[in-house]
Length: 514
Image (tube, rainbow, N blue to C red; front, side, top):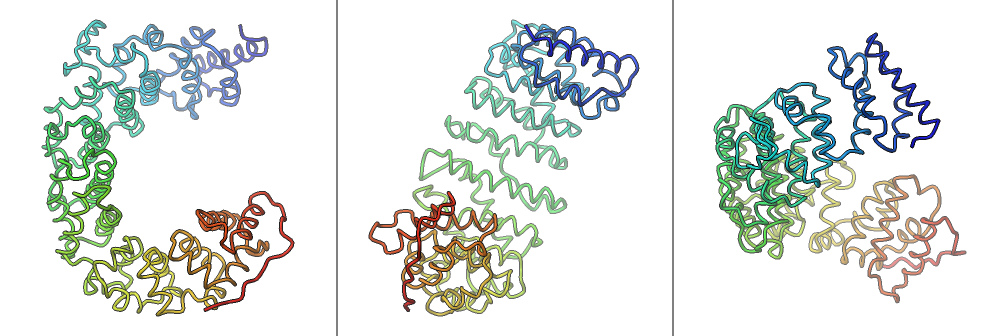
């Protein structure tokens, strides 16, 4: 039983809601907001539901409840009920009519949230199986195109006016069906081919086509993991880019789709040597890279292509041999990393900047052994903020790093000590990630180590730099042998930063070498 304070507040809230229904005046949002956390059961729900339902169907509901706090109140009450209890209050037909006829968006969103939250209950699963035509609870024919599950998928894929919050909730239902391993339902979703053919055939409606791409991405992991790649019509995920030149926004979304698809293939493909889905998109990707090389697209579209190239550059044969070989062959055949294809870097071309700043640096020099001498050495990597990310990126390649320290003064102690602290720390965090650069730091930059990493003077610390410095020290100490002369002082510095304890009376300074 609720306590007296709860009863008093509940009575006040109920009276306020009843007043709002009668007089159409705004609800007391603050009062209801304070009341919601006190609710610990469904006690008294029927009395509240009557007035809440009257309020929700009012045409001027949004004026009466501008903060939609009443929906939060209803959601809190319903959270204590099983789905079968909810169906006793809101019959299946009422729910379906609301969903399929695009009535009150807020109520629809709440209903879908409840379905999502209670998909682990058999009554919820049964609800999705129900046949919408006759509301026969004993009809478990999820093969039927009149089932509620089918209708949800249908409105999701065909109603372009559907509110984004409803779109998101339906996507969550599909994902939760997968997560709860309700395999029969997901397999049935895969069998709605007539619906998918209808959506896929209408290439002019790119809004719905974009939604269909999101839908495919949700299903792809399940399809791969259950060895159903060949049962998925390849037409659903293969698109000719030149058909969408009239719609650059969709073209960007399409390229992003392939970037996400590649990620899901890498994570879920059981074989390192082959993946049927990737085999079906190899030619499309090659044509996309070729279009980039031939400058058929605007730079803002090319930037998205670069993102795919960057992602592929970090895939090696042990992750997926098929994708790795395709990528290497594509780069070599199209000469994408050759110096003559990177000359726009001097004009601050966004694609070339992104490519040199993000592409796997070890592959940059593998595909173009002269890239440092012909391109990078001609850039002002420290003084020009647009080129600075290139400096940070090439630290990751031992070959390019060696060229940096031998052929330039960028990483000399005298140069680094003159940098602003934030720029210096940006460099140090990259140096701290790799064995070859850590070795150089320990052997050649003692002043930098002492003055900026071991010393914890407040002048070097703000909130962002504080966390960055912790990460630098953590990286440097990882797998550092006990006999390393820097280990003790670096450990003390890290402890001091984390716990604010001054544990060392002095810092030993090692003479500069090299």
